[in-house]
Length: 208
Image 1 (tube, rainbow, N blue to C red):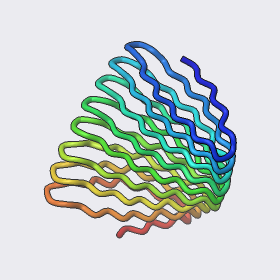
Image 2: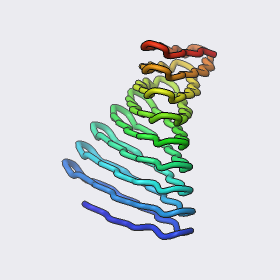
Image 3: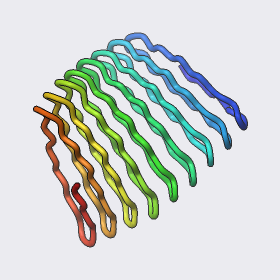
C-alpha cells in the first residue's frame, strides 16, 4: 500500500493503516504550516511498515504505531526548522521497532516510547548543528528498550528515561566533537538502567 496525502494549512490528517502478513505499507504524508498529522498504524505478523512523514515549519506530527509479534516498524520523520515532532510508540510482545528521526537546525523532537514485555525499541536520532533533541522514554514492567542515539557537532541531546519495576533500559549514546549530551535517568524500584556512553574529542557528557 502506498499512500500520498498532502495536508493544507490548519488541516488534520488521520491515517489508519493495517498490514497483513508479509505486506509492506509506505506512507508519504506532507503537512504544511499549522497542520496536524495523526498516524495510526498497526502491523500484523511478519509485516513491514515504512512511514515517511516530512514535517514543514510550525507543523506537528503525531505518530501512534503499534507492532504485533515478529513485525517491524520503521519510522522516518525529518523535521524542518521550528518544527515539533511528537512520537508515541508502543511495541507489543516480541516486536521490534526502528525509529529514524533526523532533526534539522532549531527543531525539537519529543519521543514518548513505551515498550511492553519482551519488546525492543531502537531509536536513531541524528541531530544537525545547533539542534536540540529531547527524548522522553518510559519502560513498563519486564520490558527491554535499546536506545541508539547519536548527536552531531554542536548539537544537544537531552534524555529523560524512566524505568518501572523489573524493567531494563539499555542506552547506547555516542557524542561527536563539540556535542553535549544530558541524561536524566530516574530509576524506580527493581528496575535497571545500563548505560554505554562513548564521547569523542571535545564532547561533553552530563549525567543527572
